[in-house]
Length: 128
Image (tube, rainbow, N blue to C red; front, side, top):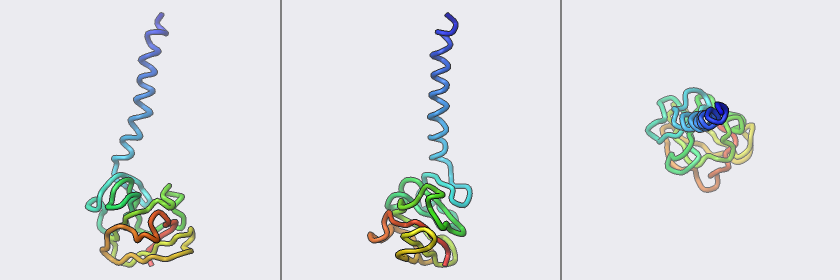
């Protein structure tokens, strides 16, 4: 009888544990190179290059100080739709991993939506 009373409570705790971390992880600020969170343009810190999965800085965000040769490592390959360059150098984005393919340069302090020909096609990026 005890097992039947304890089982629903245990299942409830398991369900809560599996839902709670996902919610907390989405709301947490990006804390390191390639960290991912949900933010807006104003949340991109000075000295970082930030990118979002949706237009107008919506959805998940990833940020860099040195770049990434393959955005699969951040689970962001071909998912960038807006960026903010808060560094003191131009950044180069590429349609292929390892800095290949079509190039799009992002000026210092530029923020906005990725051009249509690069939208959801960026696979690597770095300061150039």
